[in-house]
Image (cartoon, rainbow, N blue to C red; front, top):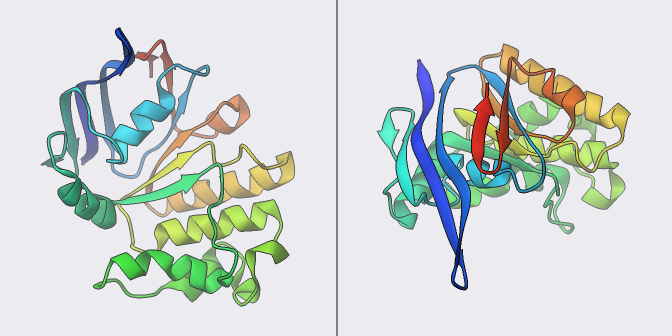
Length: 219
């Protein structure tokens, strides 16, 4: 089953009188359960593409089918529902609230999803942090904070996990732990798309998509 299908997806920005073509006619198909990496130099369009895939931004032109639904022309209120029902996000910055415990941070998205049910303890077990559930973020290492962020991204049982430079703030040991977790989730059937500058991380994916100058080069 095709979970993500983009057809000539483009995003332009206006900077004064200049038009910046941040993403140009990107066509990509991702099947359910795939693990892929988006790679390329700074300014290549990786983050723009990820923001469009995550329904955090809207394209200037082109089509985007997510789980069979055309989302390219939806309004923000509609995109919120699409994100809640389909997408989990992991970022380079952990974005944990410092006054909440680990468990409370994992449960945070449920405040915006009244039909959701807490699986926080099960997810903390999966990421190896159940014993730290009552700790505050400041008591954790960087790698542990990122694993909490991954658990939080999974709380609404997303169909796809989008991770933008998830190992960018981690040393090699913790990067390996995080990537091993992504591989485990992939083996369990979750679709995972990573943005990374680290080719060692990218090679752990099933498929590598290379971008340059806002265009998909290969993959």
